[in-house]
Length: 163
Image (cartoon, helix red, strand yellow):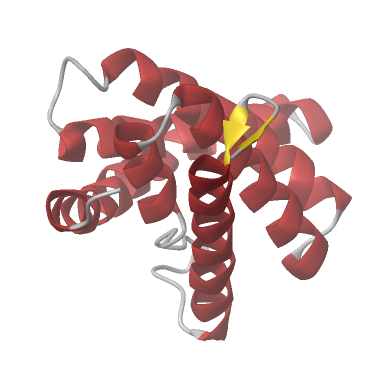
């Protein structure tokens, strides 16, 4: 059966991936310890985004990303959270899209995390002050660390889960 340009399978896979993003985001919110005094999070829901990038169509991955940002923003954040996440998510998605066929999935995940942080710092500079740009090196280091972990987990999932 088809629903416009979407098949029932594509729609179901997208819905499942969005649900997984929400569950991972919720689980991460339950963990009281952040990764540093700067408040970094691992970004468990990004496992789903990187997975979708490799297993789904580009448009489907974009839908999952936007839905993840909107649902997490509504449930766990607010308007500012949405703006930060949206800018970071778009930066991350674009760089991963460019690199996905050129580099290993772990490296793509690292670049995605770094560019997510660059997008967030840019957003903070726009909203608050350009002095926040000095926070960028710390965010890049955090992105390498978190992107590596997410990349390893995604590589395991991607090799074992068939869609």
